[in-house]
Length: 213
Length: 213
Image (tube, rainbow over all chains, first blue to last red; front, side, top):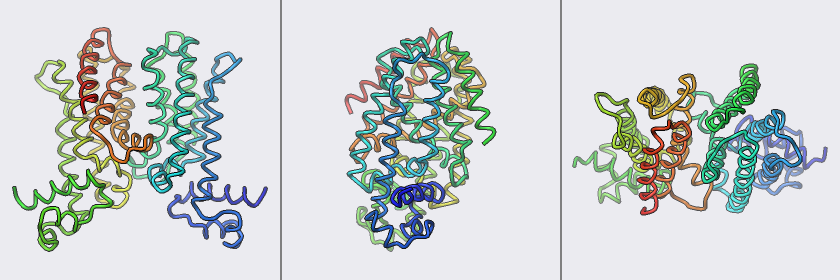
């Protein structure tokens, strides 16, 4: 792996495990057994590293929630989307823990974040419309944008909410699977007669993951 | 008004308008035309003032979301609850803007917050159960705790979400009415055949408030 990528990977790990605020570039260099000078050869500062992690985060959001094409709607396809929600929350959990803080420190990052969120909103709307057309959900089309936004909101603040509602200091995989289950419950409210059974099966899948993590 | 109460009121106003982080006890004293020494006669420090505001916040949450007794369920009763959501969000908006930050700074406050949230969760569960018993909503009883928690979550992070999703620096009344409308949309997903009409009327009420604010 290239040094640059090793730095990004180690930073993401340390930010997730110890919090972004309490992790310095010195910690990152020490963790990799490299001199701070070597780290600064690749990145100007911590914000610069965060920007690179953010690019990975953007790429994930951009690719994972695309509407489906030339595919039949089935349980595997649905689980792929819910798994992508889990991946975003777990892999980039430091972002969700300090979202407001990180965005308020960097106007350029905030502008990029807003752009990604607008595209994501568009993708989620298209996905919900497909799920309605395929008979999986029943939502008045006028309500789709607000539902897509509610989904985005629940995902974006699930971790923050868990951390304010419990004494736990950092999020667990299990608590994130619970967030996926909560999203499923929201979809259940818009289920059709034919989709209940599929929703139950997906629920069982994440329930067992939540309990074993 | 007692000096102590004037200090609390002015602090709440300044925290809401300029943010809690950028408001110091000196700002508060200056705003009231009082010496810092006089302010310190009433409060040890800013955290002490926050604690007093928090008591008002607790009292509101405790009283406003009690299940109803000896009252017929009607539109006025429902609007009273949604107005109480608006009041909490607007009157204590600085709390919702920096919730994680405020709680992380004070373990005693966090412990009190958790206690209030547990009681609130209990009240919202009872309210949802009443609304089901009165034929207004249709929710499987096993899902009521998770729905109550989702309602709490949407309310708790509505302001934070709005601030991350737009370029606005502080929340508006209109954006908070939009949050009330979003909650209503969630309830609509659990509406019964007889409650749609009432939900539409409540929606019109908050839609006009959102547009005129």
